[in-house]
Image 1 (cartoon, helix red, strand yellow):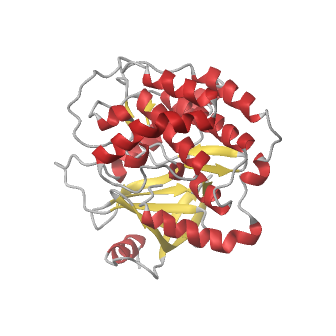
Image 2: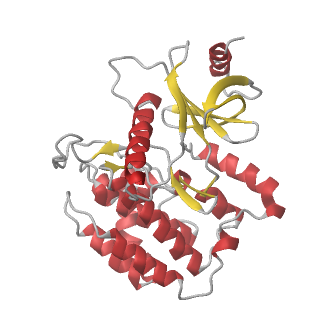
Amino acid sequence: MHTKNYVDFLLSLHPPNNIFIMYDMDDNDHQISVAFTSFLCSGGFASIYVDECEKYILKVDLEIREEERTERGVRDEAIFYNHIRQKLLQNKQMGMNKLNVPTILWNGQLSCGREAMILRKTGTSLDAIFDAHEGMWSYSTFNFVASRILEQIMSLHELGIVHGDIKPDNFAFYENKFYLFDFGLCSFYRNVDSGEHISYHESQNTIVGTLRYASLFNHCGICYSRRDDLESFVYMMMYFFFHQVPWQTTEICEDVRTIKESCIENMLLKMGPIWTCFYKSVRNLHFQETLNCLDWIILFDSEASRTPSTIEKDLLPREEKNESFQKRSRLKTQKHKKMI
């Protein structure tokens, strides 16, 4: 049976359990056949499947995309992946930009009419690694992770793009590198041709990204810009520091905003002076402004070096917990509708 027919059969299952899809493709100029045997999760606009060796990801639109639809889909995300890879290749020749993203191997339309793409999997998400260590990272690891994540966000911004969904699920650690992925909510904050920054407006009536990590500007319906990624980064690091945030038990936007505003100051004090200063700097940014992230990366690295390093131990899944770790991380992934 042809590959696309397998995919069509797969999409008719709710949820798909035992599936088998063969796909022939090029990977580093080698023709390979990949069997996607497992359903991983579903997110806002796509379902995700993984091959039996967990080296590749298949991402498929939940619905057939109509031409007049304004909602995001896999096609839009593939456009950003390809744009980013092209820019990174140009910058690599000049020794610039440290952004790490998964390689997109194929994208297109299936015979069922749904858009899909195949990515090379890049290790384990930070959320899953954090869970494997029962939410216990040392202070040195916490600040080291902060500096590396901020470096990835800064590098994406240098390409004229904001991510729109900064959260632990969308970062991975693989072969001593941090990766940023899931570009389904990305947008250009500068005009690609003119380089002009987008205009300020307040017509946004829905939260962009994940409510738990949404910026206060985002809560107010203000158009998304670089400062929102940076504020979401702080809330993500709060989650890593405390292993939870006080507002994570509610899905009501106004309640989340109220709780954030009432307890952020005390939480920052417990994280250290550097975090209070960073957060205030972000909140004071105007719509078109950003921070000098290089300076903050140096400061977070310096903070990480104040205590003995346990980075290598903290960022590798514990072998003796691998089986339960994988099961727990997949259950959590499905629960929170992670997008890869």
